[in-house]
Length: 423
Image (cartoon, rainbow, N blue to C red; front, top):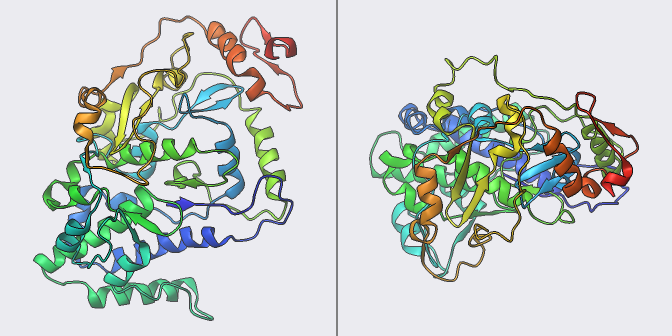
């Protein structure tokens, strides 16, 4: 899902609904309406593929200021947020518990092509006029599912709007199993994956997952939740001057947004102040959670608490779980923090402008083997966090504490962060 904000840092205008904010909300509503219009057997197929819990998530309005504040704290070298309390990062367990998507199984990878013309025409039944094509307008997919008029009509409430879209979809979708139903399902899956799981900025939907949808019986074997996290990591690393994040922003925002009429920059500053007083300590976020109602969590457990390479075709990024060992109840050991001078820097920054056919199972075979072997378990022999926090302060002090209005102390440790240490 795209969450692309027009206002620039320093803009003191009041926060109003942005066109792109409305697009992201509308995109979610359209997907939900089509899902509700699908015949029972199609919803059962989506359930078997593992998309059911994801498609039943509550719609969230993007909290523009929160997402921008978090993005400004993101370190693209470590793929983690930098806070006074240390590194923090979303994990595969977060994805599984929040989205319900599968985070185990086959990596979302394969071959990317210069043109998806033949695949689009054969699998989706959509005529493609441009030979070299990797993106499709979202509206074309909506039209193919008979949800063309996706805008609210004058005086139309949300319930009536959703009911109208659902009825439009229900009237057009195949009611029996067969080739037409398979085509409908692929069109819907491309919309779900291209606008929510691997969301792009603006309107276009990427075709890159289309080859994985040819055999519908195997779609549920892929780790779509891990691909979602890969894509989000990649897009959080874009310039902080470019506001907004392409990807599934609700993973960063698990509460409903109440509109604040103060300027965007002021809201971001206040959120930074709140982040600056996040307490130190060890915690296991889901220690009291029951897994019985979330079988996808139990299935993904062998992948939790590990350093592991994440895949979404040409986007391949490392999840450094050892940087947040405290979420496993461990003491944080001192370490050499990752930098982009390493050889593991991701191959291929983005999908835009793919210039040649590339088999990513060959191009990144070592990283793919790491995924298949479930990465490396995070362990720690440290008896306290002192060395970690000293190294953290030396490496990130000026960046993390810049402009802070309050002193920082580690009350549970033998030292405090002094201004001269952080300079």
